[in-house]
Image (cartoon, rainbow over all chains, first blue to last red; front, side, top):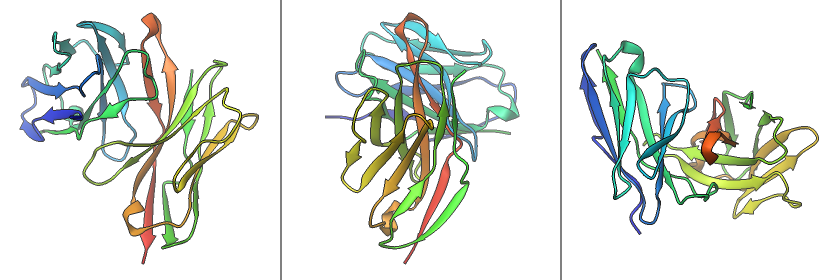
Length: 113
Length: 117
């Protein structure tokens, strides 16, 4: 059973640029959530996708957007990057209704300079 | 609004000793779930243990147990016989059910546990 994978592992971008982060969910999982974890803090919920539609969103501006594909993989897109967007971005997948079964990926560490 | 509070930013424990990591929570939802996750320096969140609000017994998973005191709204993690590999950040978290049946996890600020040899 393959776990959650994320790419890239690390990324350095310049303020104002756009970035796309990718996540492949665990086999059998059809729900994906994205979290932002700033240094020294707990993860913050960005949004969740189910059946290729956004199914819940945290307090993040519209420049944070996402996609889910038919194979349940997902992308997180961030436009007009700001310095405060520097963080570890975590993807988690779950079978629908499997609220105990969230599996997290290793994360993508984004640095905005 | 739901909230998780972890008041111990860091802890040092001698190897083989037991350690308790504190967690209090706040919610008005009668049905909720509480988690503990371990995050090593690699960054990946590793699930340790889960406690449902209606579970009658405290959850246990190997060396991990959750001391669930519902009236006090606390869900402390107990690690017995600590090992060097237990050194990591530990997060207490709560499942919050949002609109359209979406469920998200709310995390505390974490406790950095360091095990001394």
